Image (cartoon, rainbow, N blue to C red):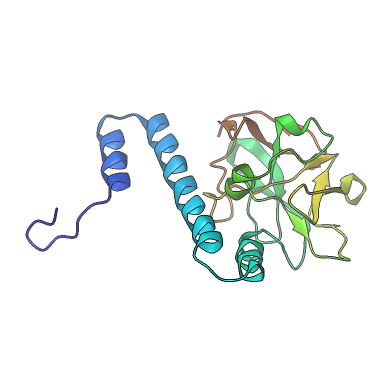
Length: 193
């Protein structure tokens, strides 16, 4: 409902406002993540369900994937977490506990919220800053392509980290498991930000 020329608020905005008023930060984060996931699902459904060829649908999904031109793993000092791994754009890289330092297990809607650091065909990962080239590797991605690993941990970004230095996914229990940043030595950092 519009009042006095003001735009109508969406149910997501109303829910976020209610969560903020109640002082429930955890609920607010959950609502934002759920709302973001719902939006992403709607976009994917639209890409697949509104006609067009399968190549059009594949192109839409491919554009949503996180493929970098330079799959460089770099480092950055971030608050009390210390020096952590970041991608070539300075965005925080995370490991997913269920991967068990073996293989990519985040797929489907998980990979939409936590895009894996992927390589283009023929590309090799590179290390910058304090990152160690010897700890870099790759793993097959169940969704296609190859994901960069560090000390055998597949690497992911978090959809809500939009600026360098943000660590909104640190110590977050989401998409079936816990997410943590890694040190340049390849150690899991469990400190909360």
